[in-house]
Image: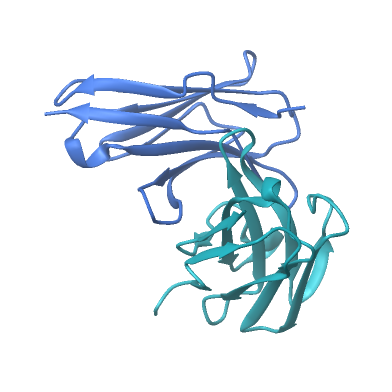
Length: 116
Length: 110
């Protein structure tokens, strides 16, 4: 298995632009997580999907952020409009099992976002 | 409100010696605790976990200790190897999600 795939690996954009990050989870996994890593806040959960349904989006910082999972093999995280404080590494992770496979999650390589 | 705290941003250890990484938590509802390891330009990978009803779990060179009364978790690596140099995230597992600390960067010096 190729593992969790994220694209792009790096994104540089200007303030105000729309940014879309993409994730392909491991086949057969039923839970998908989006995380953001910053120096100040560490690794924080943004949103959790189970069987393609958003279960908890309380970590999404504001309305500028939105996430979708149209099917079991694809998810997007969109920021519109982007701001410099959104600069971070964004990780997608997937897992399988009861309780969302909460202990063992498989992370993608991340997307490093820089908003100028 | 940080539910998981790793108070040491970095740690340097000589190769062959013991590395001890510490973690404190505030959420009594966590039923599992875990450590993930992260190399540069890669995503975190699962390392080891422990159930909240246990006080020790061992996997090769890695041992995690849990002190529930002190709400304290530690990871011991013995002996430390240069390949262990990475950022280590401590985490707690609630009903369905993981809550991570900010990470500790371990450098193992040859």
